[in-house]
Image (cartoon, rainbow, N blue to C red; front, side):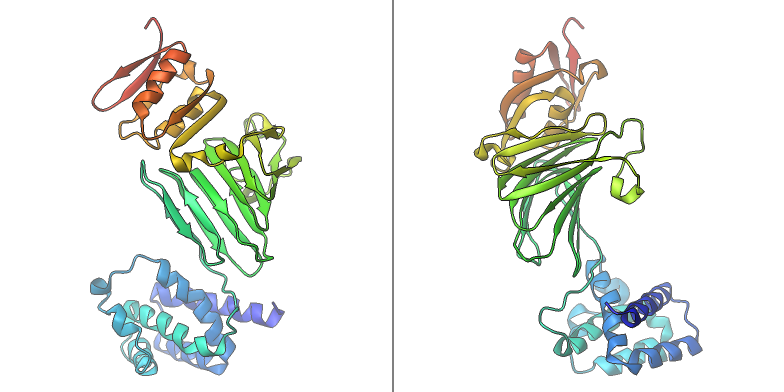
Length: 347
């Protein structure tokens, strides 16, 4: 991007903020109108700043007084744009919708078919016990696990996902643009592959079903603030590993990045089929997973958190999971209508 275009986009973002804040004077509205019409690049930059912001916002046509179908008809665009923004400034909130969609349609004939737009982040979220498959604009797909949360943000330079909670299985389209997944302090880089990521508080597991991925993680983050290393800009020494199909790896704030180990290909992303597989896994992590499928919250005593077990459970049969834990570990399950408690045996 040239320096000139960067300046234009920065100006467009300033105008977008001012229009959104609804604090333009009459003179400023005239100035904005002149700037918008001075060059196609001005309108393009403003469209980039505005189109997806509007599309991603929660939109209530009745509240704003504009029907979306009306806003999307091409013919009266310029007339409504002028009337709404410049002649009836008190209708500006509704005018935002008109401007956004109008600029999008007006500019489409002049934009290259493959012209990428830098977009605002999109949040993807699933409720308890519900999985969802999401198709992305680049041809990739994400299977988002139960009670999971992810943020998607694509640009011309990078395809970026932040897994904020839960699990996700990625089938990445090969486009030549890097595909990056941030999971807490870890960063995963791929170009085209299929892999699984599971996040549990400050730990994570990655498994590769196809292709390869590169994983980077700070050597150790114990005692430091939670959150992404990449957001904080820390200078911790990074550990890196490359995984191929049939390999998995563990990472955590306390232990850093582990060593890759072999897994069955069928077990990678097995949760998509309702299969929860654990190898020497902490009780705290198992309960974390179970709570994403159980309609009744499961709680455990802190002293039990580090107990470990290996097992395979059906995500749709939480009762069998609880019974299995009771057999494999020194604990008792106490059930109530509103909570399930795991307590040490003898209590």
